[in-house]
Image (cartoon, rainbow, N blue to C red; front, side, top):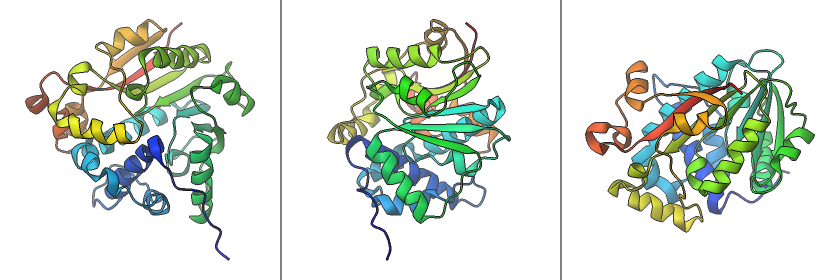
Length: 276
């Protein structure tokens, strides 16, 4: 008898289905920027992302570019520990060619972690590195939970914070960055996404905010200078613009990030090395 999956993602966890749907769509692309054969199955298990189709239409091209950007950053870092914060339906543990000895930690809400584990078993997925799930609300004591899962703060790590900071109030974002920094040995890396105020205020984003508000996933913060922001926590950062990413991968610039269409509005894609 086929096992019944845990309850599909609801509320803020629906945003994870949105991103998986964008990856599944890219998987059908003849010259795709990455392989994610599990994405479509995860979306089917979650009941599709049709309720967020408008958001995917607006930002799907950006989701694809940022996926490839973060893939490349994590693989280039080649750190023995990789930590994916608010991992959602991320499948990097299963689809990227990790160096031997890599351990990847995935943190997210317990109910989402449980659903994802059930869905991955149904899909017969096998990770390509050591993998540890950490079911925890990031508003709780996630550093202790991470260490209990086997993370060693004395060894370098590669951190990924994708699509999270804008959903956090500034003080919560600061606390998260504080603890990421405190747990990072010298030489650790950090890759993240954030937005500036002009992006939050774009007229095109109003329907997106309305959809996210309905999921209790309101955007609550922004940053004007991510390099200075990260420097204050001991990170030496660089920012990559989507115009450069699109040229690198022979893709059109996503309209929602094209300066000719959105002016000074920015989705920041930043990578950093721990310096202090």
